[in-house]
Image 1 (tube, rainbow, N blue to C red):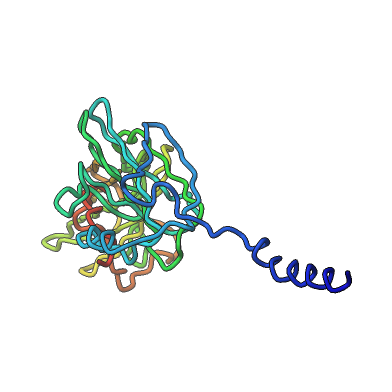
Image 2 (image 1 turned 180 degrees about the vertical axis):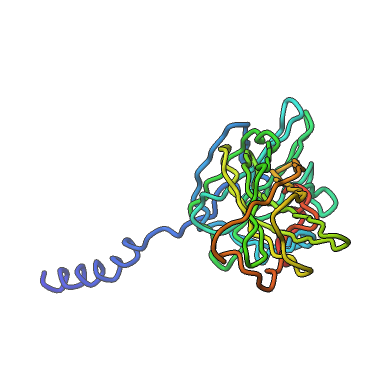
Length: 295
């Protein structure tokens, strides 16, 4: 009797690890194109992609985009009933990633857009767009939050220049005005101030980064000419505001004669003009999203 109990106890201990072993996690159903999840306009989906995989086909499709990695790839698809402009956004996910969008069967030739975080595209009615969502780092996925929404309207911009400016005893000048900007992701404000002193043409430039939140703001700029000093009297000012959204860029310009009045103190003392770094050719997001930055 004791021998039988001893044998039964040994068998129980031997079999216990097998019974307690957890089942291995499986890749999600949309790990491959055949299981692509259907998206509709306005959808916001949340998915755990930490068990998703990647393969040589993902790497081949990424050849034109140049994403640093194609880890944890999962597939979605969208077939619009009418043509429109849409935005795919995964920026609120808890890992770094992006999307590759193909019109029809995924090939390097059917690629229509790709990029990190957020992708905008114009879609045609009745056409199917296959979307590969990836992790672009060594992190193998995580909590994916993906939304498909209508594209925002084009940027709205407006800029003004005040009638009066300041001419400091040190030779610098200051002008100011107002601006408003809405629906812009890449924004800039820059301008020039020109004054004539006999045959001498005094000119300087400025550049400022600005906010684009739909509100009216004040701007001011200090200008130092490398040619000569500004003085009280008439001058000509020109200011431009640029804003680029997902699909379009918008620009507004203001020109006017400015009367420079004397300012007390030497806060405008001349010095070496600061270097100006601005967008040479502002472009909307859709013209910059055929590849990852630095690829």
